[in-house]
Image (cartoon, rainbow, N blue to C red; front, top):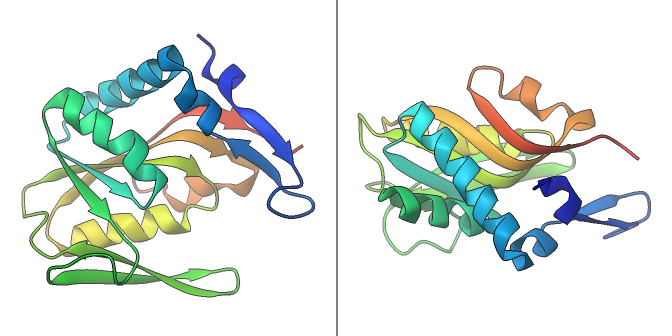
Length: 173
C-alpha cells in the first residue's frame, strides 16, 4: 500500500499558506496503520533499539505501538508540567521563542539504545531536542523515525548526525 495515499492534505490550516498533512486518515485505515507500525518496527530492529521514545503527543500514537510490537519499553517525552517524577529538561529554539521538553530522569539509563519516533519531520528542532534530552540521561540515540518528512524544510540536515528513516515525503505545494 502506498501510505502517502492515506494522508489528506488540508490547505490553509491552521493558517493561510499552510498545507496541513492530516495523519488521522492514516490512523483510521487499519491496514495503513498496521503497515506504518511494521515499517517503523523494522527500522527499530535494524538499528538495534532497546527503548522507543516518543515526543508528545503524536509520537505517542506511533512510538507506543512499535514498542509493544517489539516487546520494548516506551518512554514519553513531554511538555513541562506533565511528568510527576524528577525530570531532565531540554530547552530549544523555535522561530519566535523557545520551547522545553522533559523526560523522567530515571526513564533511560546508560547503555539504552533509543529510537525516537514521531509523526512528522519539519525543521528538525523538536527531534534534535528530544535526541539531546535522551543523551543527557546517558542513553545512545541510534536513530530517529518519522511517518512524514516535509522535505522542503530540511529537517534531515539538522539531524545529520543520526540515522533517519521517513516513510512518506511531501514537497511544498
